Length: 387
Image 1 (cartoon, helix red, strand yellow):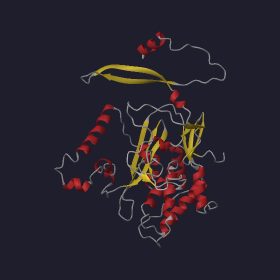
Image 2: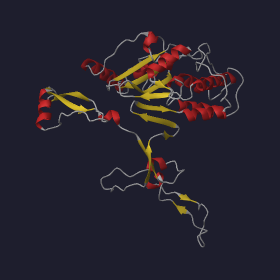
Image 3: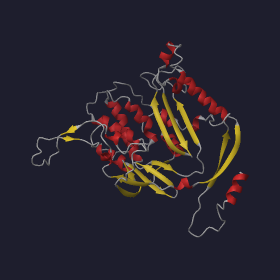
Image 4: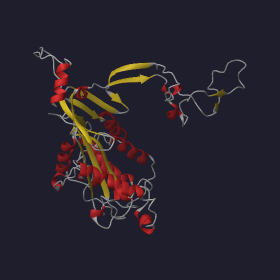
């Protein structure tokens, strides 16, 4: 640190002045690095001072005009003329040169090849200013942080289902309800399946409904009216806080923290467990998931191991073929990788009290006060709520 400070001063990196009125400062922090030599031994320790300007990046939006039409179509595709046929060209068809909208390969052909031989060509675009709305996501930016929500999308779902005036509830799923296949009268309306898909898209900013949406998604092949009752309850829960989203703010650090947990034999139909996790960077939630496990666990202590064991082959197949070491080598690699990171101090494991386990919201149905407590810890924020 002394050497770094000396270098900063010798290069005239800054002048000490009084902060002018109306101006604000950016923070700074020290970044420490261990430099190693060719033999893998520690060569020197390095410290670098960096400005924390990355905490104040504004988000802007632009629209690329005719984005698909910039990609070259590699396949040979012929299309009938779309009308407007010129005289003498009635017997001709269109041989496509560009990846026209509607082709399944068009999204992959967008843009330009990543080769040095291809010169960069500027794309015609429309600047839309600061990012406010994108694919149903509403983004509100301020000096305090960024709030991402889907209020309009949630209200549209309630309006489409006739639930706009329904009575709200404080839980998305009754903790006493356990769903099983064939429970009640079968549903014949495919719109019910589409609705669950919309709710799944809503989980982008609503981690609090990830678990109930994951549960009802397991019965879409043969949905019944009892399963539909759970969907209705999710809608009533959303009605209470349609504007709830996620707040992302500068909390003064960039530490990565992951929480994980699993219930034990929570599914009454096959006694499989449900795993959940959430990951924070700098105290902000960036990833979460609720998923029913693919195999039955015999004891709860094994639930964490499933993430290593059930990668490409089932535990049963591995157990019945113990000599296939080459087939299961990746499991040992993952295991030793984590052990090395723990030994080096890059990864630290810690125990969390059950009352502070945030992942409970991804593995089981909870009561209203518990949901509200966890949502607050996850960074849920409703800028439309009355103060």
